Image 1 (cartoon, rainbow, N blue to C red):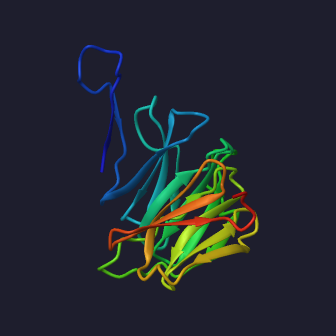
Image 2 (image 1 turned 180 degrees about the horizontal axis):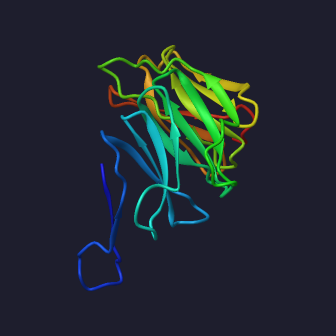
Length: 195
């Protein structure tokens, strides 16, 4: 997979640069909110790469994974932490402030084997960057601490009869939307949220 850089201010629609040289399908592309020149890509070739779109050539750093990596998202607080979801049954948080490949700062064991009929899980950050949310094969939504990997909570309902693979957390962190392959979206309210 390859990414093209377009300058929307220019009259021409020709690319001004490119980045990425993954050997297989790119699953996610995400901008670092505090520094939009940094882009993270996750790929089916078992790698996550961080690119500076202003530079040509290779990635700034590559984070190898044991199996296909389904997602890589920068933390919304601008802390340069990266959350990855991998088919090796792990969710990882990397601290990229040093701009070098280092072991994950936090690793959570999580069954990510959704099979061929479900969309792969993609863990997403909470707005404050203190935790992350991911679906579960037990038809529930799990919330983990980004610093320690401890389980912070779980959302479940008798109405959620399918596994949710896609999630979004509102800006206040009070509600989680969980989308299923059956086309339903379940909205969960945090227990301590005001009515």
